[in-house]
Length: 199
Image 1 (cartoon, rainbow, N blue to C red):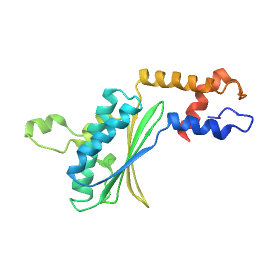
Image 2: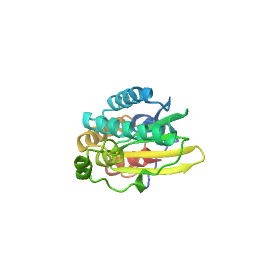
Image 3: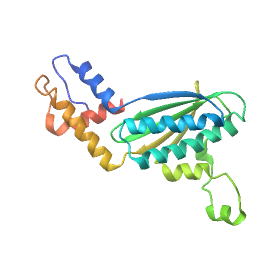
Image 4: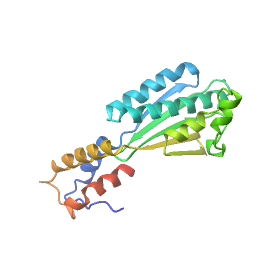
């Protein structure tokens, strides 16, 4: 996707303004212990409310991240000391949460789909964390890097919230209309916003 060409040397000004308003990276580092889970949930709630996520979106992430962090604590660090870093990025279309740890690597995508009926019949406890994450999220990606294991959780924004943020984006750019020259301004405005969000 090509961005709109911005003249008059104001590209940097507009880019910073848009990124600040529409792609909001937030992070927190906590000890990899069960005592950190309430702090993580509070962090997700505050970020979600600050950037106008719906209650459903916030709760979906809180439940999924709770399960993911519990797995990291129990199986990654095996209850040894360590940290979990959360990085949250919010755009018009989606919200992404990255969990970074230095524990034992474990790719959740290698886990087979759980048979819930078997769990109910046998009375098993636990083991449904990844199943729950898959139900609430749109994508789960995992990679091992030089900085540690990165679990990337993605959820698409609800259409109402997306429309609201796109309207806010349009209003923001109207402030610059008198000073900037855009190619096909009206038809490409939102495309420009998506380009800036994803870079």
